Length: 302
Image (cartoon, rainbow, N blue to C red; front, side, top):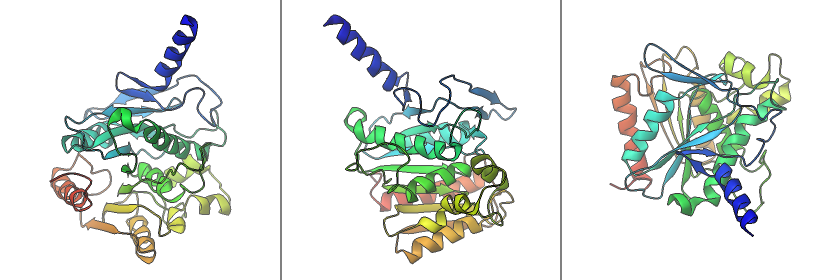
């Protein structure tokens, strides 16, 4: 009996929270070819930390002083080759936590043919597994399983919009009674399409390969998969974004309108790409507008 209890404790420890970091897969992550942790971090002169070669995905839990039941999964950007973890992850999480939202930063696996098969399913698998984990363990974190949202930046915005449009056909094993649909979606200068004329070339190549077929391109062009069931959405982008064309957001917005999905979109004249938590002038505006949107949708308490 004692040995059984020890075994249960060890398994639970592997799957649950450890120093605010949660391993979302109980064993070898789905679609992975290696259990080795190949991750490395770099911090630049601007004190921005980026992660590379992520093979063991985790959620970092940033707990509010007074959780209000709403939670959000945060997907940093980085062209599907790195994760801009500090300014598109930790700082954003702290902003949500200050407002009572339980924040979970997703350090998702970065697609690589050497370690994953098929690599294009891997980021979505991690996002869907995160939603599943939080739904199953909602009581543990004091969150409402019906108010789990997702936010993504740049390529992380592509992942967030994929999770928001592909939930009816999961890429993970899940009980059909469990709905993997996020309750809300927040997309900041997002990559939406894989159409070569509008996408971010690096994100497309890193996710789908250098010469993807038309079927694969269409599968991950999320503007094509918006339905009336797509979550309520907040979008922010800058007209002068030279990395991810603003038409990514505009086309997604139009698809949401066509399907009568509640959406708010704000396009700034200037701001460039990657402005989140780095451009005081733009930050004061989009974060103010996001705060207002969260209150309007009763996701934070005034």
